[in-house]
Amino acid sequence: MKCILTQFNFRTLSEVRMDTAFRKPMHRGGNFSKKRRQNSDSQEENCESKKRRKGKPERTNVYPLGEMARREERRLEELVLGDGSDLLNVESEIPSSSHTSAMEDSGVEEGNYDSSPQMSDTLASPEREPAWQDEEDINICVTDAMSAQGKRVPNVLSGGSSSDAYVRILKHKFEATVGTPAWAELRHRNTRKSNPSDDDDSDNDSDSEMLRHCGNFLSSQSSVLRKGTIEVKRVRDLNHDTYTEGAVIKAVQFHPTATVALVAGLSGVASLFQVDGKSNTKLHSVQFDRYPIRCARFLPSGEQFIVGSQHHGFFHSFDMMTGQNVRALPSQGLGITNTKNFEISPDGRLLAVCGRFGNIHLLTVNTLEGVGLLKMNSEVSAVTFDNDGSRLFSHGEGGEVYVWDIRSRHCSGRFIDDGCIWGSSIAVAPGGRFVACGARSGVVNVYETAGLLSSTNHAPKPAKILLNLTTSSTAVKFNASSEVLAMASDEKVNALRLVHFPSMTVFSNFPGSVKSVLARPQCLDFSPGSGYLAVGNNKGTALLYRLKHYGNY
Image (tube, rainbow, N blue to C red):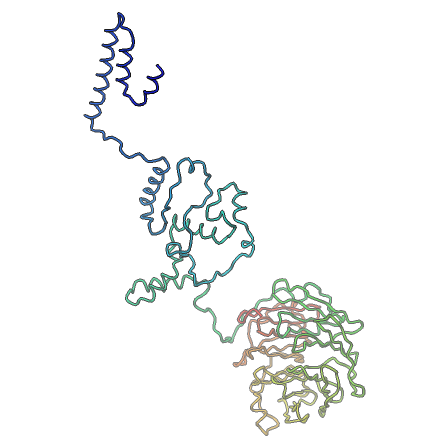
């Protein structure tokens, strides 16, 4: 029996049965067993013949289970997404079914992810640098991150932790599944646009070029300021964080280069604020003991500011870089009894101080040493430098305006302000074209500078006479573009007007009817870009207005 079992694999089932029958002894039921074997053989032959009659082909090719699943997946991808031969690289080796079932899906596909024409980054052209890149992504270990999430690490990342390879895998998977969006094909769009024969494509490209940008394509406002009305809005008060500069704000000025403003008052406090129109955060405050501030000016360098008082003959200089306050005494024997009215030259070298008996003292900014003395025939009320600092204009009692040459320290010309008895303020346009002279009667005369310097007439006719103020015009100021002239009086509520240039007409909608808010304007200033107008009043408030025609600052 052992020999028969050993040879079972090499013999047919019928032979084994025949051999067994010869070896067994014959018994009474032998004929019945033989008949039963014959019936079984006939039934097997009948089944085979029925199968052949039905026409079912025999399975000649048998595929592993993993390969069958992959073939079916490829067939469905071609049916839904089209032929993927131009997007995917077919793997040369197909993993076995046991290995595929044992692996856990990591969320990314395997394959050759080297840089090739099929793997080119179509979402962002290689010639274009990314607009922004997260620095923290560089330090991420991709293999550790995927292992912590329970995902299988692809073979391409098994040797390292480069995030670039992982990015290429994700981009490749997105392109293979979704495809490349039309708006992201920048290189292809530029190629189509360069082909003049394709008119339809060029039209579509021009539309798409427009859709790449946001904002207004047609400017809703002109670059030239129009007369009549001005678009202005009051924003948060400049000194909203403090309100400690005093009951009367006597000085307000914008920094020449930074978005910073200086506010000072009779309490002896000078504060610096960050100008943004929304919060106007306080940067720093300086308390000058028993020193009521009447005038404060930034140096053109922007590193220091100087303050003066009507009760003291010395200045205070504050260095914003070091945070030090220096008490600056002018040279002895100059006769300076107060420092309530002074101006700094545009080059930052000279300081012009209005003194008594018509004296104008010229001091050096660094040492406050007297370098010159200019004398008028009557009291001086206001002084101002021209744009380049080569000339100095002074106005005062008698209504006579003096023009001084700074280099020679001599009077180069003078004229009588039309209808003026006592001058109170003066301003020169940044371009040097106009000169505005204010009088105690409230009249503001505007002259053209070219006619003043070339004419021998000592009583020129003004280009415009502004009669909008009925009290003393204590402050006049041009903006940086010489398109707006602000004039104010500290003797009457709501006495502030804005004048349009070159039409020389007053804007009808400013300041409006809010008399309680504006109160009595004491001082004013425009920001370097004319985007803001600051006004200090007698209520301890530095009002801030946004001029929407101009830029942010």
